[in-house]
Length: 224
Image 1 (spheres, rainbow, N blue to C red):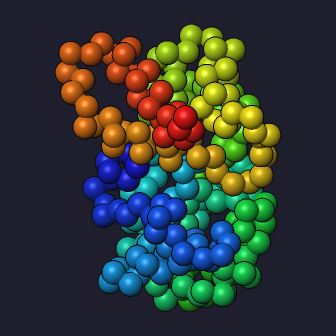
Image 2 (cartoon, rainbow, N blue to C red; image 1 turned 30 degrees about the horizontal axis):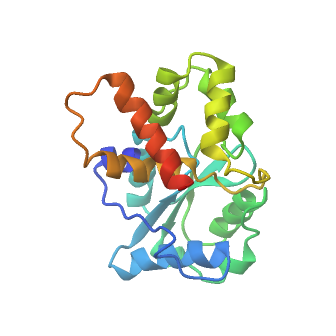
Image 3 (cartoon, rainbow, N blue to C red; image 1 turned 90 degrees about the vertical axis):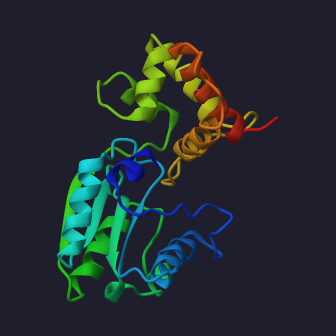
């Protein structure tokens, strides 16, 4: 959400309350159709697990779309972290023609776009964060994003960071899922930022602000 806000582009959050469909493909395509129904001629969808996505990349995608191109950003598992679609390329049948949530998504979407009248702009590949291990590996790589910066503030070692992420990422008494779906952690972090903005934190120390925001993310993810 922070990247979308900083880009200056109009954006919408289509969460579970607004999603419509019986499976991921239907929900995803219906969300894009919702944007088109508002009068937009092009739409960009970004995933909640695109931790390393930055404003420049989003603006590059927007520029490509203004030139009439579709946009794809491939993740490290063969899926996508971003989809930019022109309205004239939209096809509801993609909800079942694409093998969503598999390592075939990028290739199948690229093949579909190649069959349309629009060219495709390809963004750099980014790491996909689907597991606790993948997030903890990124924690100490030096790469920058708002969520990882906050974690580095309060976690001084890899073990400490991994331990905190385990609490934040996986529900209590559950078996971790290693599917190609994006983790909820960044969605919860974005929602926590909205709640956090309503608090009076002017006298709080930076440490207290950071850990409060992260704990609020955990509370939203897994309420007692």
